[in-house]
Length: 159
Image 1 (tube, helix red, strand yellow):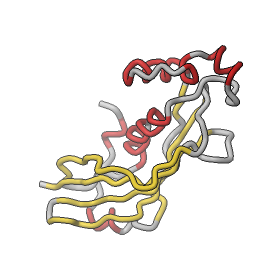
Image 2 (cartoon, rainbow, N blue to C red):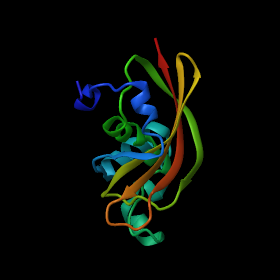
Image 3 (tube, rainbow, N blue to C red):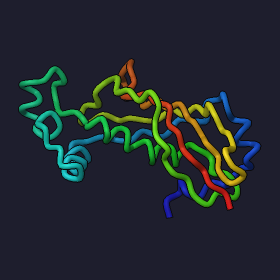
Image 4 (cartoon, rainbow, N blue to C red):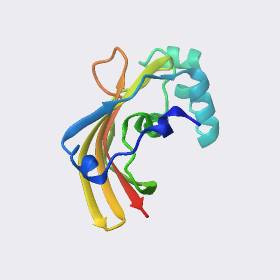
């Protein structure tokens, strides 16, 4: 089992006490050409800016291929598993969506990215359902501007 799944759980009140605070920053994750190519195959998006390094070098301002914005967004899952705490009694968590998701800077092939997470809301909607809103920024190593910023909303369910 992956180590990120083995975190000790915290209480709901401890989780709610994190509102307004940065929860943490993930490790760096490599976005290499292989990862971009695999993602292109999965979503059937083979635009040259993603999969043709020579053409991207010649015809784009990026100097190389760039990751799909949705690939960068998809990496939020593993980044959040590394950072976000598990709440005692959780049976499952699901994506509810994003507010104000913006792709700010391209992620060039060979770059490393990491997620920075700040909990901004943790509100019980029902006795067994918590709405969790997290402000997230995906940083690109060595770049001034992030790859993306968003408010990520999840629903966490309890027994």
